[in-house]
Image (cartoon, rainbow, N blue to C red):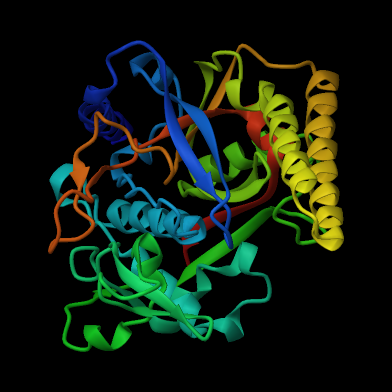
Length: 374
């Protein structure tokens, strides 16, 4: 029986890997801040076939690539929807064209309406419990992660027409609540889910660095292997907090020099320089003070990561996580049509997974939560 299982896993994985037969390369992605249109451009390592040899690959056949979140500020719900897809596809052994592609927008609407707030004491670790409140979700094609015209009225986003003053077009439209439109829409019934906290920052700070235990990478790997379930990781993404989904790992795959962590201090200082320049250009003393304080925080965190990274021996030659992310659209992936009533707004789907070195979790993570079916 075990031999048959291994054969099936190998077969499914061979189909999954067909797009990764080229040499290692980097893909670019833009991370936006949650409340403003500040952004940072970073790169991530795409896997090759060699990246999977000898790795923990059992969850990979069930991964659904995420649509590009752009400036929606939706990473927490992209990652949790990704976990939901892995678990539901795994439950029914749905692979390839049979996989469920579920609605991030539904999850976002639940949060906006406060559905399940009574089940959540810390949103960084408890977000999956919103789905336990409703016991259902919807296919993405039924409640699409979309782009639309919106404007802000009294601090609230509302639908708008293209020609309206103050109207914007984009993925932030997904935060406009519209669950009433789903009253007659076929639903996906869900089991109950459970989250197991591997690590939570003691101060509940999603920007923190250097607070995770030194063995956090091992803890994440052990949790995935034991439960055959994915892990949501929140970390400091060059000054912006970001949530992603770890769906596997490989102790033998090359880290390619740990590009994200090894360049982190440089990028944090570059961003600090930009903030200082912004402070120099303002005449408002209170804003200047706030910006300079922000710049100092960037430098402090960048230096802390660099010092810890060096003290821990720097970049190891091998050891990577397979990470499903939502900010690295890949031209090798199909185009995703955000708006079926429009043309030209399409964007490539994200790579199914990118690679992050174990040092990424060790130096930058502040929360790690396993999601599984109860």
